[in-house]
Image (cartoon, rainbow, N blue to C red; front, side):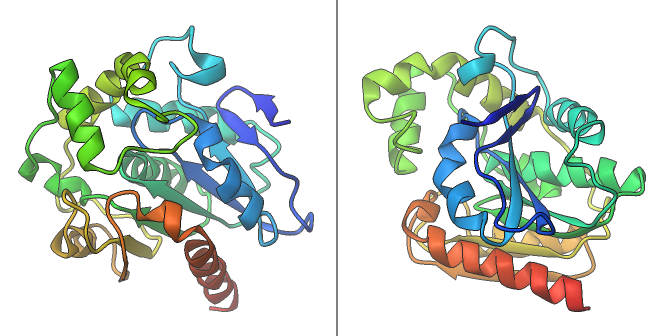
Length: 252
């Protein structure tokens, strides 16, 4: 069972109490449980903590937040006072919208003296390039078609079009927050960034991944076979990538 702690969900105990903390930021419309298998695999290397945004799953009675920086601030507020803030280095991972939330979280964390050793952003446009993307659809059917074009999302939440329809209020709120987001090119984090994505993603291109160079001094880009949700087919490979990144930063 996950440990219920406000925004934080820990689905699995780490193999070692000394494992580095990995913070996971879910994509638009997703709850923390979408990353349960991700957590299971990565718990061999990390103390995995997945954020649960308001408005979904066990926080369904709470209102969704209206901006990505607001989500990041709420996540940091709970993390900073939790047992997972161990005054030790950590790394962060975010998929799609979650990558932008992770970026904003890292900005706050670094400003508060937390050592973020690495940020991995998955299937995500760079913060300063969000405005170059067309806004998300507003109409219910168009949103459902958009999700289908992105290969749906995790099967736990979006197993069918009917279930997807039930999640529309949260998806709309997340899409609105994403479309309203803006960030200047000169805003950087100290953490090196690894931008990863799918080579058949209809929304995020290789150029979009390289755009993250505007926001840190060190960027690496890796492409996998697949679309926007390539992660479902490459979860083991991405886990290995994260473990290797952490080891490099620990020995640097």
